[in-house]
Each structure stands twice: as structure tokens, then as C-alpha cells.
Length: 340
Image (cartoon, rainbow, N blue to C red; front, side, top):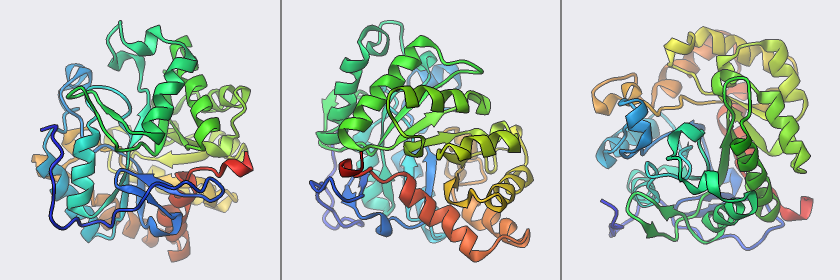
């Protein structure tokens, strides 16, 4: 499974790695590209989750079929989708080699993630708990600039991460995640990599921003996920007023709330002048969302069902383009070091 497969005709053009740190670029698993070439993007999804702690915690957190991923991405591409951010950070469940293969054969850009998930997804002796923030940052920077380590098969790769992740817990940020945030900040300062965060049930967003600012990172470099699970419009405006980006990634995840709630949030935030900071996704970590694992509604639901419904609610084509194309391209681009 972990050997890189060669294809005679790749579906995606292969770009080089950008050495021009004075211009923005997107780092995908098949190389770097200009932000304007990214296209329609869902900025928080999961394409591969191999057996590991995630599966032990929740058996639905298992996405171990590359063929299912390719079929799901074929549906997504047919609906107009162009790119996906795979939000699975360091750990045995992530496979850079499979992400590379899936991206090349599906024709969909994939941005991979370094950094760390919630502490519960790691064994007690994991280096997340034992190493310093500086040591963790070295690992992250290497994954961004040299290549990610495929822990599923104990193999170095030349496939680079384009995002760094850290998390908070329900209403608090434990010390180990404060350390992970520090490591992400160091990596950001050294590379310009954008920072994606997990907010447990939408809590601690402002606390995350306050913490990352202590490490010298501008909130505009942050992409805060799951914020729609705490659908407090006043709070969301406070978050956006700092410059941070918000991802409403609960589309079709009915157990967290109906799509109508997300539509109301989008319209409220655009109406308040924060339209350049909002993005949407489905956070498809559970196989119960995937059509090709025998469930549904499928990765193309956002484009085929949710967006038409958003338009019927009066949202403009211009607004849809900002939501799906312009905002993700801006948010997940590396910040030019000349601006830091």
C-alpha cells in the first residue's frame, strides 16, 4: 500500500517547488501552483484515514480505500470541484504516498497537512508529549520544505505539506496544545505556511487567536474550523474582526445542525462585511458521509445540493465565487516572507 505507484500519464500537471518567497503560492502534494489556478476548493476534508487511534476511538473514522477516494473525487470534480485540503496531520492514519497517488489519478489538487491533532489521537509516549516546541517545529518545517514522513509505513517521502494544524479542546487549550501552537507559529515564521486549527464544538476560537498572537502570528494567517458548531453570530463577528478566517464545515453533518443554520451564518457574515473570510466544507472524516463506502450523501453534496440551496436563498453568483474560489485561494496560500 505504501509504495509509490508510477502512472504513465498523470492527470495533474506537476509543478516545481517555489523558491520565490516574495510571491504567494499554494503547496499541493504534486507541487506548488499560483493561487489563481486553485479553483473551487473545500478547505477541510479527509481523504485518507488508515487504521490507528482514530479508528479505535470511532470505527467510522476509517478511510482506507484509495479506490473509494478516487471515485468520490471523480464525483466532486464532475460537480466542478478542483481542490481539497486534507486536514489529517502527523500520525499513523495519514499517508502522504496515498494522497499523492489519489491526487494524480483523480485530477484534483490536494493540500496535505502537517502539525498535530487532538492529544487523544496519540499514544502517551508520542513525541508530541515529550519534545519541545522547537523540536516539534523542526519536524513541521521539514515536512513543509523537504517532505512528509509516512508514519503508516515508516518511510520518508518528498511529498510536501501545505498547511500546519493544531487544536484546542472543549472550552480550553491544554498545555500540550499550547506547545503545538508555539511549534506551528515557529514554522509559520520560517516558511509562511498557513495555519489551520480545530475548535472543539466551535469553542476557544478567540482564545486560539489570543494565543497565536502571543507568538507573533497575525490572525489573518489562521483558518479556524468547525466554528459553525457554535453558531453564535455575535461571536463569529468578533472572530472575523481580528482578521482570522472561518470555515463552516458542517455542511450535510446534520447531527451538528441543519444546512439552513450554515446558510444563515453565511448570509449574516457576508452582510456584516466579512465575506472575504468565510469558507465552506464538509469535514468528511467519517465514512458515513461517503457515498462510495456505501453511505452518503457524498463529497459532491456541497456543490450539487448546498450551493444551489444557498442561491435559492438569495445568495449571488459573485458571493458563491468568493466563498468557493477566492477565499480559499487567499487563505491557504503561503504568506510571502517579505511581508512578515
